[in-house]
Amino acid sequence: MRRCEVYVHGIKAGILTELDNHEYVFEYDKTYLTGDENPPVCLNMPLRTEEYHAKSLFPFFFNLLSEGENRKMQAQLLHIAPEDDFGILMATAQTDTIGAVTVKPIIV
Image (cartoon, rainbow, N blue to C red; front, side, top):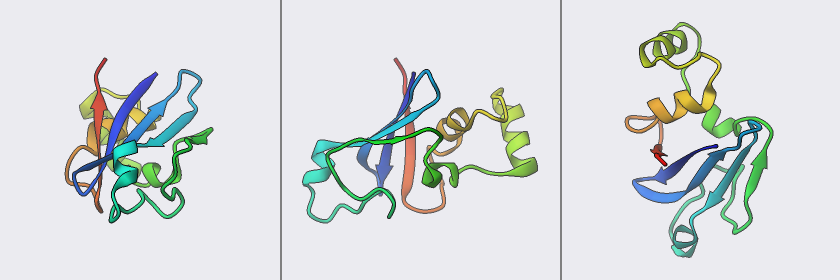
């Protein structure tokens, strides 16, 4: 299992988890949900207390990843398998992403 914190405009919005069976769970942070002005991470994941579940990486997070030759080069430089979407997300989406969302790995 791997996990990362998801931030929107630098505010912790929730936790994204990759389970051992390569399914994914996203849960909003309870404190984030109490903020009146906090936006959802994306339109397909409106604010709610229930977890979101997916059999593959949620499309919003997948779209933060590079493609093609850039992805191959990143994977090689980072020593990550090119098909490891979650690993590449955690390694590349910590700063300077397109939009307001960043992620930070949770090291256990």
